[in-house]
Amino acid sequence: MFVPNHSENSYLYDTEPSGGKRFQNPDEASLEFETLLDYLKNSRACDLTHYKRSTLMRRFRHRMHRIYIDTYENYLQCLQSHPEEHLALLNDVLINFTAFFRDRNAWIYLATEIIPKIIDCKPSDEPIRIWSAGCATGAEIYSLLILLAENLGVEFCQQRIQCYATDADPDALQQAQSGIYNSLDTIGLPPNLLEKYFKPTGQDSVFSPELRFSPDLARLVTFERHDLMRDNPLPAIDLLICRNVLMYFTPEAQNFILTRFHSVLNPTGFLFLGQTEMVLHQRQLFRSVSLKQKIYARGLEPDLER
Image 1 (tube, one colour):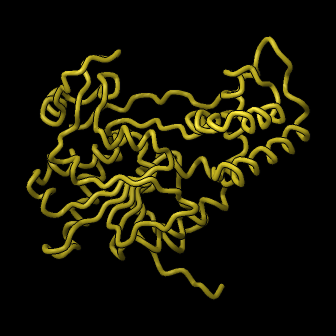
Image 2: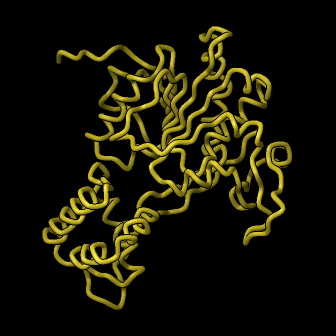
Image 3: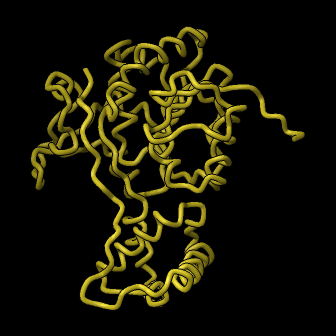
């Protein structure tokens, strides 16, 4: 029932703009870049200061290259003169790549080992609460619903499952909430699942036909805009999916977010991370269930006096 794992596109740009000035020396560029981040935070309510600088700089340069700007100082002037430019910048910075059943073996492990444990630990009259943090365009939360429906039935999902999907990017959330995907988005889904859980919208597009995810399952998901560093996390969660999100944050920010995740997971809850992520400095909060598949259980309470 799972799609084959396929390669991820590259989103990190290392090239300098061609046909123009090259960037200034690293120290000068770093100072100007921090000034740029301060402006976005204080004047555009867009706080990117917790993201890794190397990743941010590459993505900023990609945007600057597209509009023929070669220094951070000049880009700051552009942002000040064109208030809408920061929205275009965010589309480049907040990369929203995802795929249905990405990392197939991890989803198999989730289906066979983790979901049964969650169900066994929950009283039959209580809902199972799932949070997809950094849900991008929704492929992972819908993958989970397909997994649950295939193994437990749609009726079980409608009776017991409560899903929350959040992201900082409003455009990604809008697509996720629509549940509409093109044929490239669903490449690799087995034909039986594609036919069972997706129906043509009747609309033509570049990648025709457009397909809509099952409304019966989609209505189980509440979509919200959410900043992992600033907004309060969702409470009483049994399964928290946050895949390929933490790796873009600084180590300090990762620790802060993981501590918040621990605080909202139920005692029998699980955390599902991406293949390049792991809990290194928060082992007192989480214990590894499958290091290979990056699945963790809620650990001991943190010692707040230390």
